[in-house]
Amino acid sequence: MRLENKTAIVTGAGSGFGAGIARIFTREGARVMVGDIDADAAAQVAGEIGGIAQQTDVSEGASVAAMTQAALDAWGGIDILVNNAGITHLPAPMEDVTEADFDRVLAVNVKSVYLTAREIVPRMKAAGRGAILNIASTAGLSPRPRLNWYNASKGWMITATKTMAVELAPEGIRVNALCPVAGETPLLKSFMGEDTPEIRAKFLSTIPLGRFSTPQDMGEAAAFLCSDAASMITGVALEVDGGRCI
Image (tube, helix red, strand yellow):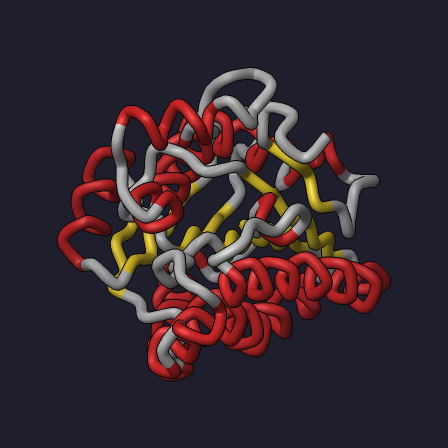
């Protein structure tokens, strides 16, 4: 029960890593808001864990404000924020990615961190405590060709994590990031271009432990970094990648 009596918002929690984080947080005693642009997916996960479902577009300020207010109405305060929602463009030469795809990747992966901070950081400052976890990627540490603007967005998130950690430390707020390798999530096919046994085998050969990151892996790491057991840890970008970045 590492997160007993804690309240947590997890964005993009209707599937994949976010759902795994929401489930582990609940197991560890937290009350969880499942934020997702897909209302049905959010409702399904929230129903499984006894959480709160909240349809949220993290790229829209009004939607993030509504999510924050819903959490405050339910709990009175927010202890943990997990910025997990993210998208990618399909693998392509950098100059062939459309402007619309570029804008969407930056809006969901970058602007969302600003929007949630704008709404939630003042509440955490008032409480004198809080934990923020940004779900980055090994792509931000060891970029691969043809995912240029996605790589860049995750590199931005890692830098944002470190600068947020420095600024918010005096306020009692810790900020960390997780850097998973690709996992069994809805984005896997987009990362690889196509999902075939041959492409999977080639990708897995680059991971020393020989498997993808799982929602369980992410949930366990997230629960630790957001718990009081990690009270001296802030500004880290923890690789949950089976050794891929070595």
